[in-house]
Every structure is written in C-alpha cells, then in structure tokens.
Image (cartoon, rainbow, N blue to C red):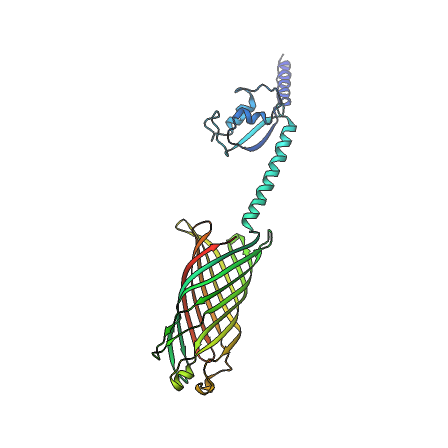
Length: 341
C-alpha cells in the first residue's frame, strides 16, 4: 500500500511538471487609449477565452504592482507581459517584435539627428562693444585711447557632415568705430572700421557635451603712430593685419534652468602686416621693428538662446602684442543674434 502511495505522488509530480506553463516574457509600452484586453488581443490566439482567473492575467498583475487600475491604463507607461505558450499566437508576437525593432531603429536615427546636426547652419548677429587700447614705446611715449563700437555686424556658419563628430565653421564681422580721444593730444581721432574672420575645424566630445576646435583667425585694425605724435604732435593711424593660429573649447551647460553655450580660446599670431599712416619725415625709424606685430589673444564668449530663432551673446577679448609699439587691447561686448537656418 505504501509503495502505491509513493508511486501516485511521483506520478502526480511528473505530470504537474510536464504541464507547467511556459511564458513569453517581454516589456510592452502602452499606447494612448489602449485597454488591458486590447493589449492581450495583440498577442493571444483569436477566440481565446481569458478572464481574471486565467494564469497569465494573474501573473501579469502580480508582476506589475505599479499599475493600480487595470481598467484605466495611461499611454506611454511600460508594463511587463507574461503570455503563456498555450495562448500565444507566435505570428502576432513576431510581427510585434519586428515593429518594435523598426521603432527602435527609427528612434536611434532621430537621436543621431539630434546629437549630430546635419548640413549647413547659419546665423547673423549684432554686437555693441567697448575697447580700451594702450600703446607704449620706450623711445617715444605711452598713450591710452578708446575704440568703442556702437555696432558690429557679422555672420556665423557651420557645416555638419551627416552623423559625424566633426564639423567646419566660418564667421566674419565688421565693426564701426566711433571717433575717439587719446591721453596725449586733444585731437579727436576718426577710426576706420575693424574687420575680422575665422575658419575652424571642430570635433565634438559627446560624453562631455563639449567641442574642441582649432583653426585660423584674421583681424585688421588701427593703431596710433607714436613716432609721429612725438615728432610733430600730429595723430596718424597705422593699419595692422594679424593672422593667428587658434585653439579653443566650447561647452553647453545649464544654469538657473536656462541653457547656455560658452567658448574659450587662445590665439598666437603667425603672420602680420603693418602699414604706417604717417609721412616718412614724421616717424622715428629706430623704434620700428620691421613693422611686424606678434603676440597673443585670449577670448571668452557666452551665448544664451532665449527663443527658437533669437539668442543673446557677450564676449571678453584681450590682446597683447609687441612690434612698432607694445600694444594691449581689452574689448567687451554684448549683442543679439538671429538664427537663419
């Protein structure tokens, strides 16, 4: 009798294990307007009879404690589904799997488009600025004067190859400068416009949300001829053009729940031109070092995009150079930009 009882229990155990349910387990994101029964019909065989006592329903409810009301599901929430093999329509599941993979692929493409801008982007900008110049030469004098600009106009353009981490940027500007007084004479100086531009190669560091860039800068501006001031008390302007090699970094960051974009760079002059505006008789030739300026420039730039098309921007730029005179320039500015495309 005891042996018969053992055999029956062993048989029931085997039978129970043989009929244990196998489940397909996967995460499903609810779409707006879907009910629990509609979701299940996406995966079970047609004409299946399922109710609250069906094991797969119990298992789904038990494994999704975050859902409090199964008769009031909300879109874009994720639930874990358990569809037992006896109810599963494998063809429906395969279609869902294929559609899900397609959606994932599309989302990845969209992310790439967002992470990696594509094509040509451009903007135009206005900026007003204040410039303080100091020139000195041991053989002549030291002079301080202003080069203020009520407006600078320019454009900035960047080309992004499709889904690449590198890009190329170009910008140019022209600054109108108001007449200025200096610390040596009472004469008011009329200053020609300043022009400049740059061409950079850029590389994005996605992990740090920043950019490394390097390239060439060019600026053409005016300085005073100190020799002529000392010789005959007249003010003449010299034209200076400087090409520089620039390296810098740019980074986006959030502050006070606002999004900002900053740049910092350092430039070293590699080529310069110098044209004296004074007659030969008014200059002191022994202080002129072949008319070449050389030195460094440092710049900080900050940008705040306050709408889809408009942004505020500001900069601080400091230049120190030596040549016909020792030259230091500090310029600060603030302005408005408009995104073209």
